Image (cartoon, rainbow over all chains, first blue to last red; front, side):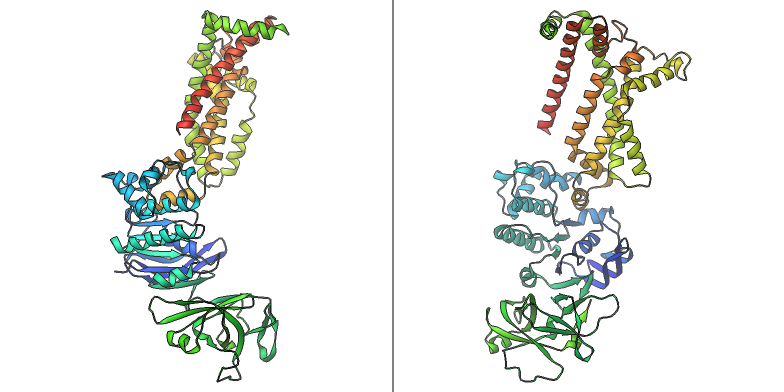
Length: 340
Length: 229
């Protein structure tokens, strides 16, 4: 049975719609990544999945059943680590043991706390007696994660767990999170800006824009100002003078998204089929990255102020001999551009 | 200005020689303020928590009323309690006028708004992620309330310290409701007022120093609690 089934949810803060998802299913023991700009609804979606908030409209089913915030199953099986995790004004031991104590599950508690601290790379003997204010940012983040892992939750929701920590802490947090799935089959939903981590580890990655799932993958978002161009198309002049062309938006939409699966990459001046309705942008590759399936490569291409992602087959990378720093041309059909 | 020096040496003499009148005043002060503080904390902490934690329609107005009550003059409270407890008053039959309990009732009215307002402020100022953290770790509503109070314990302690200071040092209520009866309801502050009226400034200063010593002892105790917390 699916862990989550989201059916037509719309969530509002006052008049502002923050999440709108028609249909989403999360399978047990899967890792789902959420990616998107700030304010795209990632944190709100995680709160909804943790049943901390109830969607204004629609339903979220947990294992096929409707749940409320304080239902026993939700409290014991789902846990969320917020973006700025709060450490209780207590010792590290008391922080990690808190969840176990309120469950009345104090059997062998010292060893379990030590084990959870070990999972996140904190030596129990050095940290267990420390107060909350004696920890660095990365250590505090890892203690917060240990406080969740010790509960062996069925669902672990992580809101930007590596956003404000150093590279080593980030590595330890990533490893510990993955162990939750390996050791006891936890389902993970992770919101992060670390798209490389997501594409390396997630079974599916959802790109959220304005609270909606953008189906094309990690699209590049472009904001105005736009000016009227030829053929009833809009134009945006980029910082280096290149022009991005887009169709007119529908009412209420003001952001363009470049769908990585609809963009094509080639070498400058070598695009063979320059059709009349295809436009192009020139840039250079900043990153090449192999997806988890081992067959698809993502290329991040810097075009003026934009970083545009393109997905392609691995053999195309070999054929074009792409490498970071290489100049390339992106070809796109303006009619394929979507407004959000 | 010699009375400061005289007052200091008299204070030491009164305490070392266990002067019965002074110890009676200390006892009345401690009994009345302890009773008042116990009731204030018992009622004020839950009410302050409720006021700080929940959002409801009348919250803003209740906060205004509570904050206004912070400025209650002690003589006005004394007058009200006197009117209530006097033989012909609505609660006259209780026989609480000129008793330590009567003083404690007045002092409770003085300290309760302080405990409520400062507890509510401490709860309101707590990290917005606290509730999310507690809920996501599996806490029930009651556990959330308990843990939130524990998290803001330093703020609540500050409320207790402030209210205790106000109660220990007030004179209007003790004078009007207690009647300043020697060996019975004479507190340190009413004794100071009396000694000043008699022109015994040295004795007044001595009693003032004794009061400060009590306040110092209470604060040392609270500082110990704070360190442990």
